Amino acid sequence: MLSDKKSMIGQSEIDFLGMHVSNGQYHPGPHLAQQLLDFPDSHLSQKQIQQFLSIINFIQNFIPKVSHYTSRLSALLKKNLPLGSHPHISRDSSQAGRPISSCSYYSFHWPLHPPDRRQ
Image: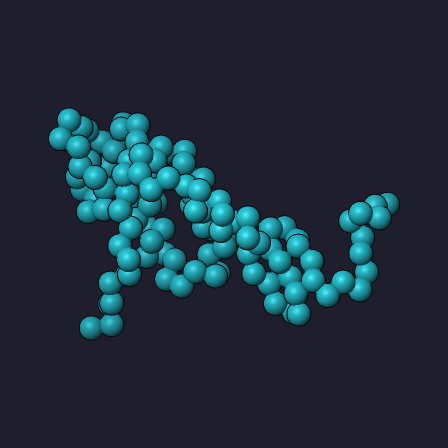
């Protein structure tokens, strides 16, 4: 049985599964953008990186060249990646030589624009 709350006929716009659908187009709901803005810029735990990537994965069709950015974060989740081997991770001399996966937090610095590879 369908509930009255969940069954609306003849609506011109709806929110469905985190997306706002209207006039034959859909875009992410504002709550998804807010979740991304609420993530800290530094001291990310491995779990937070996974959560961030899962939100990005959900809205990846709306972000141009998303793989350029997500590949950098995904690299942080690899086992035994040596600290200092990734150019956008803050280097802490007290943790030098340790695998990134053994560190409890990361600082990640996003470049403003992806490099132009059309050369």
